[in-house]
Image (tube, rainbow, N blue to C red):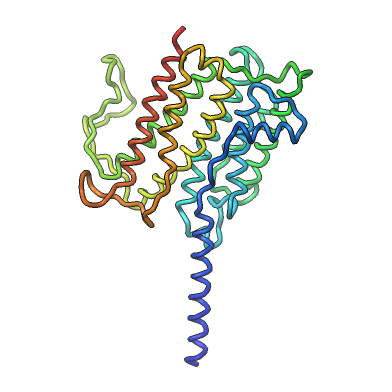
Length: 328
C-alpha cells in the first residue's frame, strides 16, 4: 500500500514539474521584430505594392497574430492547467491587446478616412469590433476566433490599399490623423504610469476639476485619498505594462516610416525616436524571479516604479509630439 502511495506522490511531483516547465516556456515574452523589414517581406511574398500605410497595417496584423501564435498560444481564456494558474502572460497579452484595440479603432475612424463626412472602409468596419470581445471569452465565440477574424479583415484592407486600381481603399498619412491616435496612446500610458506608481501607495489630491472653476462632477469625491495597487495585482500591472509597451513600440516604428514626410515637415521625427528609445528600456530583461516592491529608497528594488519612470518619460514625450503635430 505504501509503495502504491509512493508511486502516486512521485507521479504528482512529475506532473507538477512538467507543468512548471511548460509555464516557464509559455511565459517567455515574444521578441521584437523589425516592422519595416517584415512588412516589405510580406509585400514581396504576396506580390503587393508597398504603399503608404502598408507598414502600419502590417504591424497591427503581426502584433495581433503574435498574441495568438506565440508559445502556448493565447492564454488569457484558458480553463485548463497549467495556463489557468498563470497570470503574468495573460496580463502581458491584455496590455498588448489594449494597444491593438486603440490602433484598430484609429484605423477605422481616422487613418482610412479623408474627412469626418467620408464613409468607413468596409473591411475595417468589420475588423475593429472583432478585437473588442472579452479577452477571457472561451466559449463560442472564443476570443481567439474573433481576433483571427479581425486579422483576416485587416489583411483584406491591406491588400486593397496596395491595389492601385482600388480608389476607395486609402490610408491617409496626415498630421491630424496621427495626432488622434497618439492622444489615445497618451491616455493608455498615463493610466499605466499611475497604476505602477501606486504600487507603494500614496496620498493624492483630487485634481479632477482643476483648471475650470465652473466644472462639476456627478458625485462627491474627497479632496484627497489613498491610492494603492493591491499586492496581488502588482505583478499583473507590471506585465500588462510590458505587453502594452511592446505593442506600442512596433506601432511607433511603423508610424515613423509611414508618416516620415509629416514628421520631417514638423521637425518631429527626433521626438518620435526619443519616445521609441524610452519604450525600448521597458523591454529590458527582468532578472529577478519575482516582481519586487520595495519602498522608496529602501534596500529592495521596486520594479513597478522603474517601469513607471520609463513610461512617464515616454508619455511626456508623446504629449510634446502631439503639440508639435498640432502646430502649423
